[in-house]
Length: 374
Image 1 (cartoon, helix red, strand yellow):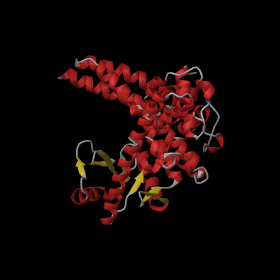
Image 2: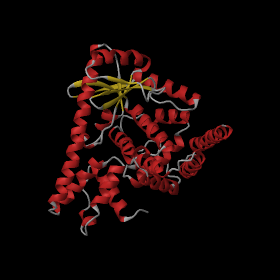
Image 3: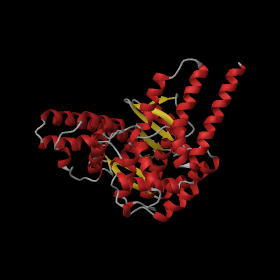
Image 4: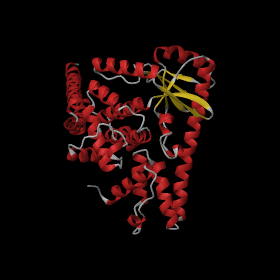
């Protein structure tokens, strides 16, 4: 199904996910380490893969490769420490102001990994609900280094930055384009985050995080809609699998089914679950609502994931480098590219994919007609 390089990359990633030792016999004839690590960086799992490559390099007395892996691991560990320091300062500032915030994803999910410091970190997401504006304005006055970013603010969050670390303070955990689904998501998240939470510690500071059931659903919703819109790397899927594994005895399967059906996402959940069991090593019994149907579709989904990158960055970079400058030629180029991107997704996930594809065509046609009128 995959070439040798991709197969070895996936083997190393599975070993990192499930804390297993790599099969040394697979690497006796050598390997394209640069190619493997390029895939790891594209999918934002370089810390996990570098750890496994280091084990192999040590047995092969490849000191150059050992040092290269250690450099990657140290850089990620330092980045995690920097994010954790900002997170602790943010939490303490909120506590001083007597504001309540809920940590979403990110460092709260990192604890699901065998070595959290090797998970590539990103920004800090907190759910602050209806108090978002008040919290943002207060922190801008009272937290050293807290800088509000007015550009890029969306309906679901406010943007800020501390020491180069991005912070998103969320009015809503997620904003689907469908108003009915958006209302259901708000109903679900408001109830969950008000009544079913957990406490963790980061740097000795207590932080509130969602329930295991909420995390399982929310992590999936987040990466699934990114997958439909722009693509995702395997890091986002790995976050989901580690949550399902670590919290397997805490996740309420009935609640998962109830809300996925309400959101219209049960089919998508089950197809991603089948893909995870077949290709990423998740034990079948740990996949809530597992359904062993559409294996060929699950395999196709895995190929699409492998061909992508973290939030579609490589795809956008390539498109931007090759797009024509003339407006109509630019639009035609985009139409062809997005058709090739959306159609396979609409085929796998018609309930969400087809409306997105038709919506893009409608928007593009309107833009072309407006330009023609001008």
